[in-house]
Length: 497
Image (cartoon, rainbow, N blue to C red; front, side, top):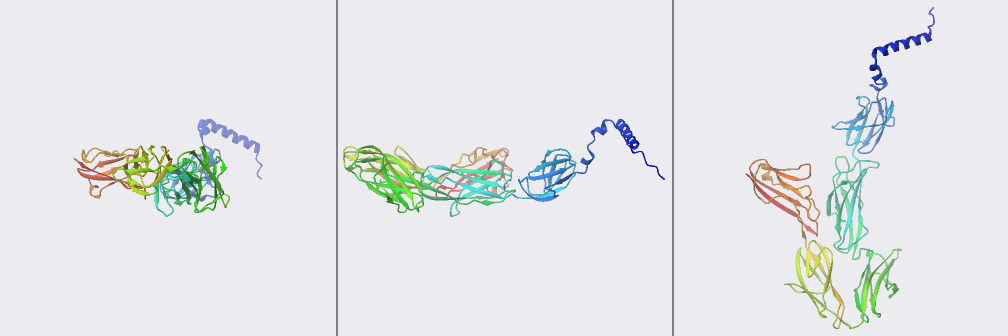
């Protein structure tokens, strides 16, 4: 019969053995890692050892007996370091996958085995333009590309903005902006009154899918608001004026009321195709504020105003002769087509008063010189203050502008003989876009590829390197913009010797 052991004695014996071992091993025992942290690491996501993931979308990992940091190794190459948010036997970590493919997560000892199949992040694109814009005045149109919420990946690549017919307006590169978002913008000028539609198409990248925005509508008006008042700034008492008020968009139904210093001078005038017209004969003399306000059948409203000076005196209206030098006199309310360039004019009035000319649109007027730099439509208004028995007047002319010529400041030297052992700089980092905000692309002629090649340093410049003696032809191009800018082309031919 076996006698029961003395448990207390056994415990004391084990303690003694431990004490001896500690004396022998010394600090070596104190420096050893906990046994459960060696080879016993467990990594899960909500209790699962594997899951599907998305680039930039966080995965919450629970660890047991793991030694940080963790590492996510991708089958196609590359890895992410994942720091534990709290240490100890039980830990946690947040992993933001940085690329696509199958990945295995282990701890710093290579223990544990959590796997995830990481897919591209989906994106949502939006284009944001002002509701209204003034013809000839640039406004900012912004495109935003957002990755899957709550994703942290900032999409890269480019976006193309098209109009209602799908024609390309501009193509821009994306800039990171905040968690999970990138953006691009450009300055756009309405060439004429009307409705303009923008839609953004994101091309995607290695880790983000493509997306297309909804359409955004911009209404271009002469005033930049939803109502514009067309009336002379000066008038003569007793002379009838025709007042025009345009309400946008043109399809709305409603009425317009005209006022002088806030007091009505007309009954409600119905809108016909967005236009209300009223013939008014001023009876007072002095400086006043002429106004127009509208209401629509749908409950919309708006107003605008402008100053008007009413004088007493003659009833004969002044007449302006605006003449294009070397061509002929222009007739009021007519349309003239001019290509890009500079044109000289003379202007006289029956009253002998000075003729003042104002311009709205992409053209510019200085003195009696008209400059037409881009496509679109310009409006010229010539006016006098009258005198010598003539009442003040104003006359309008419309200019349809031809295609503007794109230019770009580039570092490329003129064609000629060069030292083939030296690098030729074609474009500095601060260059690369035209005056129409289009990107410049370089190419080497097919017959020259055995002689030279393009080089793209990390600083963003473009260089040309000769591989052998001979002739090298390179071309810089940028796309045109329909109805506004002609394509940009620059060619250089170098003889490497």
